[in-house]
Amino acid sequence: MTKSSQPAAETAVSGLTTEQRHIEADRLVRNYSLGGTAVGLIPIPFVDMAGLVAIQLKMLHALARVYGIDFRADLGRSALASLLGGVLPSTMVAPSLVASLSKLIPGVGQILGAGTQVVVGGAVTYAVGKVFMLHFASGGTLLTFDPETMRDYFEQQIEVGKEKVQQARQAKASASPAPTTSSQSKTPISAP
Image (cartoon, rainbow, N blue to C red; front, side, top):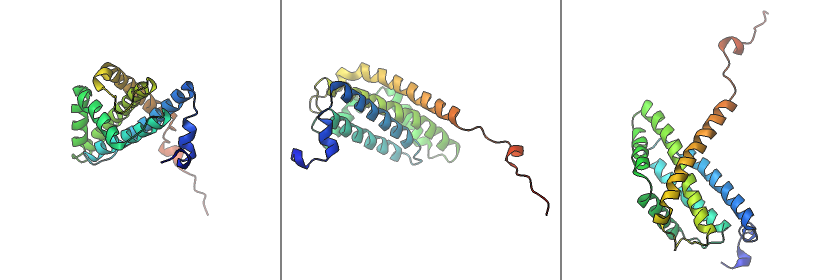
């Protein structure tokens, strides 16, 4: 694809300053992290996990565009798999798998599974985004990505991501209107 045939949004990204790239990349990571939390609500085991990977791959594509990195889906999947498969702490893998499988249990299992997947999905998506922001900002590409060099940073960002998801959930809960009591919700009926 030639430069002139690319959509305006893609070509405009190349003119960003370093600070503007960082701001745009940070915005993308926040937005895709929210998408990662939403995927946790999918009630079908393993479909939720596949959806999460799809969101993370789309985020990688968007981040690569911001940093002017060539993106190929096969390289993106490989980099993502090497990060999640080789570096993702086992303390995150087991609960995520159990949460996904617990959705098979009607009622309580679905509620508990969704609650866990919301936090895990958002936190891991946030951490993946932050890792690739750092990698791309330092001149790295999908071909040069080494998950082992990012292990500690990735684990730190998972913890930051968990905090951010919890804060967002608390902010949403406190912003929700208080439920009305039955006496408040009744409208007086006038006599005919």
